[in-house]
Image 1 (cartoon, rainbow, N blue to C red):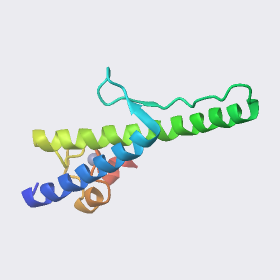
Image 2 (cartoon, rainbow, N blue to C red):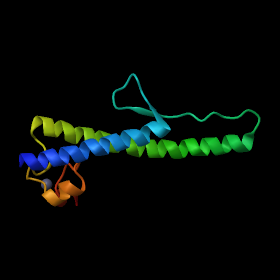
Image 3 (cartoon, rainbow, N blue to C red):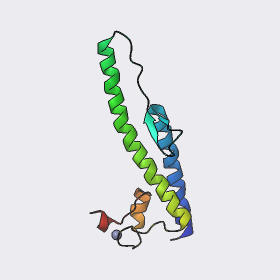
Length: 118
Ligand SMILES: [Zn+2]
């Protein structure tokens, strides 16, 4: 793959990573023991206020879902950066053909070509 394009896509990926980490850190804490793992922040449950406690739990559940999805995206971005490092970036993981450039521009963390994704 063209070096210039790879550099551009790498910048996109790093930008995306920064953004994802920012979002994650607003609702989760990095797990110090497991690399790349985040834990949704526990809500502080106010004592004696059941209604508010229920709201907090609901918010926590929502955060958990968002956190999970962000963490997954972050892992995909990291994996793509790793492939750039190894020089295997841009190849479809299933059929080994080059992934369409337009597809990579739209989602630089893609691991398969459009045909294999379908
Ligand atoms: Zn393919």
